[in-house]
Length: 415
Image 1 (cartoon, rainbow, N blue to C red):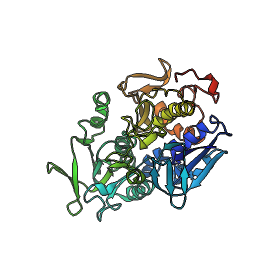
Image 2: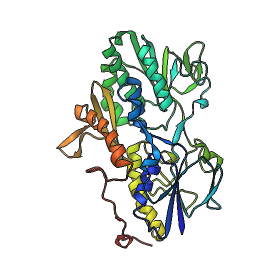
Image 3: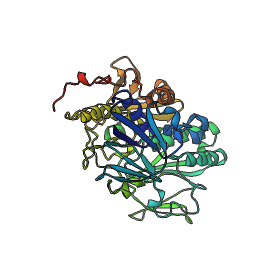
Image 4: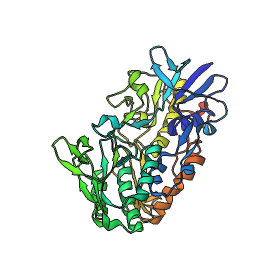
């Protein structure tokens, strides 16, 4: 019996378990997934928690319930990956593998910025990329009376690159509904040269910042936070004062990647951007936020990656050449407030374009344009996430048809 081990039972790991359980011959392969956390979070929902749009029950469930029958589930901490011996050390046992899938995700690392974890942390300085941070920020916003709100992005890459802007737009709408928008000065601070990560988006959508009277500070590379003066300071000694700082700290891969010597400076694993195979070890594959591929770290990207990776795992087990198929495809809803949202669709080579999605001329979703339909699409994705995406069920008009359908003899590939 051969062993395929999946490290991580978040979005990517859970999808891979569901994709592969019906594709790998059960008499030949045992699939094991290692979950470091009992709770599975719908992370896109963290954006809505601070504004009381979602409740806590809507963004978390027990992770084990999404792991299919036939997959060995282990809930333990991962200590180290030993690629030369094809083994993974857990807190109290060692697993051997023939194929390893790394799906350990990424986390915020506020300790990387001097002063961020100072006395103001989660008092006047908050993140919303964690469940605990989003809840603390929700409580703060409920009682906050106004002042200088600074929404700050430390550095790229981050999970869901549009989320800081979405937070800024939702904050504008939230304070207007509370009747205190005139008492809140909002500034968006980014290390990039524009508000959006894609130049096309910056050119097409900059009007939103002007329309909503949101200030923007670009090319701001933060050096430290001064908790006494309540300012953020960049390497050129530029200072931006705040009364309330909502920050997206440095994002890094799981610490097990560093302990195992498998990552770059941010603990992301060097990965072939089209096949999702490790660049260093042929029998290791990487998916989702754990990779260093130049695609967005977002659930939609993991969804498209999973389809390619499931195919390539089957090819690898049969000694076939891997498909260089994944093209960095991502589609992201961008909440703009007032029950409207934008939709962008792009890949490694293609900048976001105008038009409709998923059908040309019909839509119903509009690209690079605000609409109520886009907002509903964003909210509908939560149901799709829990009921389809995690379970590896094809999403109509979005997922491609899986090439193999569990029948290896259908594959037409080169050895």
